[in-house]
Image 1 (cartoon, rainbow, N blue to C red):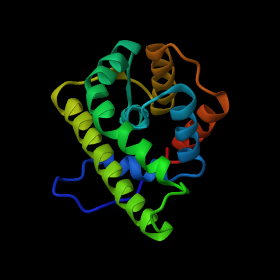
Image 2: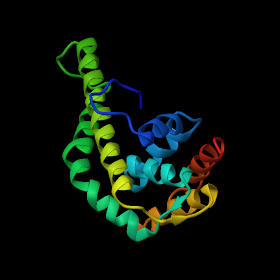
Image 3: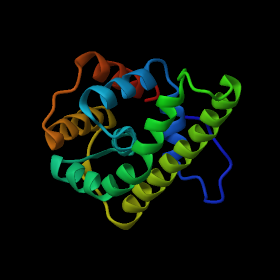
Length: 171
């Protein structure tokens, strides 16, 4: 994730995501969970942001949030990501430098789609309080567990450990 100029105001959640995602190992852990368990990285980042605000959610909250973002994710983020990944190193009749330039433009579109999803998630927080008050460290662990329960999968312990360590490094 790289910061970019946008017409919409940058939310505190977006700023948090850029910092958290940039911490050592966090991006790799997020991608491992995305590819291995089908998680929505933006939703996971949102759960960590809520934890940083001292909010712990239940599996039902995660299901509700996932339902809200699913159509956007399936319409924009997943197809754009798939195109970006397919372009990487693909052998086509297009000059490789031009193909990579197109891939860079696709990455910008993917990032903007993710930012818009995060803006929508942030708006949910502004319209209704989520979860219950909890110490940030407990909320982070609880929110990850709620996500696991919501989608019925067990996340890689090593990936979760990296995410929790990244979270705690700012606490």
